[in-house]
Length: 239
Image 1 (cartoon, rainbow, N blue to C red):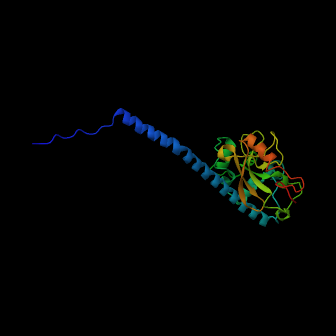
Image 2 (cartoon, one colour):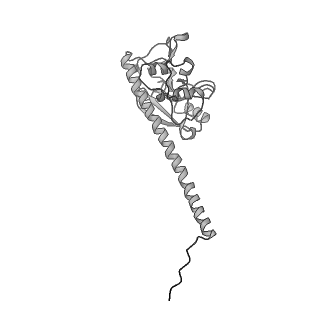
Image 3 (cartoon, rainbow, N blue to C red):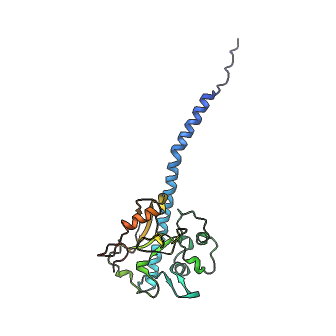
């Protein structure tokens, strides 16, 4: 006498819906963690590029009698921003001037991210790197040229910061020391516009937490940790 074969086990509709609901809940729990991990990776990558910049400024100081580079050199067709000068002297590749956390499709941003390096850096495009030098320290070529070694509290004075141009569209080659809606500013980029990466004169890099997002965060930083101390000039100057 043969035994009857058991019918195959099948999911009921309710069981299938339960499984789908569990998968959806797990995905909702994991996706934010994955996004945070991705953001952390971009922040670390950005800090790595600032460390590249730190090495480049050391090369420049060794080649230029310890003088802090100006925002730009020359006039007219001979004008050159510090960004182009660092690239042309082979201190840095073009990619080192861009922050991986910024995803703008702006033409001048893609210019710096281009894998095909132009023979000469266009004068207009030179301005729009995503890290800006501290204008209060660097100045223009005809300003008094200061030396790195003259900065007394080098670990507290900014040299570079993530930046935004006056129209808030793209990065800029320098940042101003006083907050204004119409000037190039140090700008929080990471964690949805709430954290800004910076480099100090002594070469170390770090991150500053903004008390708000983007413009509000920028203003909060300038009214807080970036507010110039009148007695010392920190964090913008200390000569």
